[in-house]
Length: 314
Image (cartoon, rainbow, N blue to C red; front, top):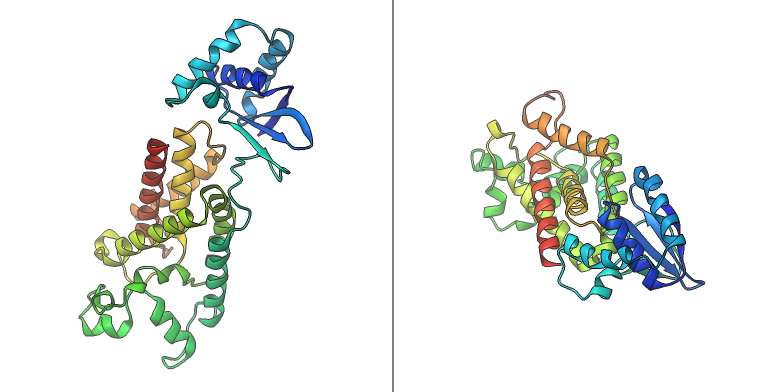
């Protein structure tokens, strides 16, 4: 995202932002308490040259009727039922300081759920002997058996029923596999994505909503992965945060496509990488990698669905 320039008042910002939107250019508008001027950012850097031409024209002829007329057209493009000035001003965000270009929703600065997920995952990794377990009576082995989708004893006693532990009332097992990681690389990749996506989403959505999202993105993918038959890549012996992370990816990906004001976009190569990894895994193209492909699929479905519902309810 790149800065386009400043305008002197909110009315001018509304007209310019609306006109840019009708030209297919998505923007973000920010003000600070230290300055009365309003700064306009262009989200897609490739559109910056065109946006600068429009900006220069606007500065020389700000009273041109086409800018005022663009406000109502912008409302129709965004399909919202708000008054003219409210809609054009919906992208103006006030803040005390700006840490980085991006959506400034200002709901909170702390991210307790993200930090808790990260800390618990790191602690479990250490206590499970870095995912390698140990003798059956060791703490590492007992912790893995207590957190996995089904305990080995229940699985064997039930003659391979993956739901055996759940049927005994151990419902936490629908969630706790997200804290199990089998190698340092596995942990590092998941924690990096959690730190990147999780903090951003928790700040934007608020902790209660984010916590509910994470819970759903853990339970549904884990049940899908754990209960599906092996010929569909199902297995109860899995672990990792990837279902949640694919869910957060799916939410940001689809929300940014449906909501021009969302302000966060995922680079196309990253989309290709994750979707390609998911499709390739489901097609059996990576036989040497032990990945929970159905967890990835389940998380992606939940994230995409949540994004669609969020846009429709806004």
